[in-house]
Amino acid sequence: NAGVTQTPKFQVLKTGQSMTLQCAQDMNHEYMSWYRQDPGMGLRLIHYSVGAGITDQGEVPNGYNVSRSTTEDFPLRLLSAAPSQTSVYFCASSYDRERYEQYFGPGTRLTVT
Amino acid sequence: ILNVEQSPQSLHVQEGDSTNFTCSFPSSNFYALHWYRWETAKSPEALFVMTLNGDEKKKGQISATLNTKEGYSYLYIKGSQPEDSATYLCAFGDTGTASKLTFGTGTRLQVTL
Image 1 (cartoon, rainbow over the protein chains, first blue to last red):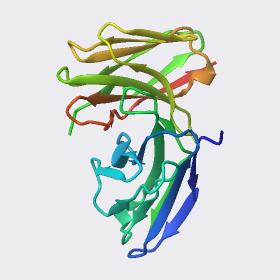
Image 2 (spheres, each protein chain N blue to C red):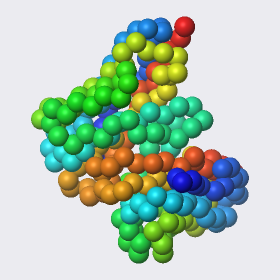
Image 3 (cartoon, rainbow over the protein chains, first blue to last red):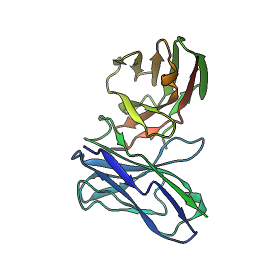
């Protein structure tokens, strides 16, 4: 199993550009989520999905869109990048809700200039 | 936004020392408490998921306890080794925010020879 994979590993965007961060898992997990990690702050939930076709907002959803057309993939779209979105982004998956450990991808380091 | 606090923020111990950290969370609507270990340049890895008051979990020299009535969990490391150097994160899930975990900011542990 590859586990949770994320692409790209690094990305530099200019303000106003859009892009999609890719996330895929091969563990047949129903639950997937996106977090951002900023210095001095814990991992903050952006969006999550409890299964294909079902998504919901987390703590910091503004400026991001998600969709879940398959169990395996959960892409995160930045609609119009802003410097405040400079962060490290982690995708995670788990078997079910909060009672099961989350498996994290390797992260994407995004810089918006 | 739920308040999950970890203390201390950072800790520097010598090899062989035993140490412990605290995670404080709301005592109402408890659903689950997670501990993760996060090494520099890697992604978080799950240590424990605890769901019942009084739970005790152990993995090697690392153990954790849970008190849901007073809203805290302790993580213990017995006989710290340099390879234990990492940031230790806790995450809280409550019954009112289905499928969302709130992470603390972590305790950064450095173990030196």
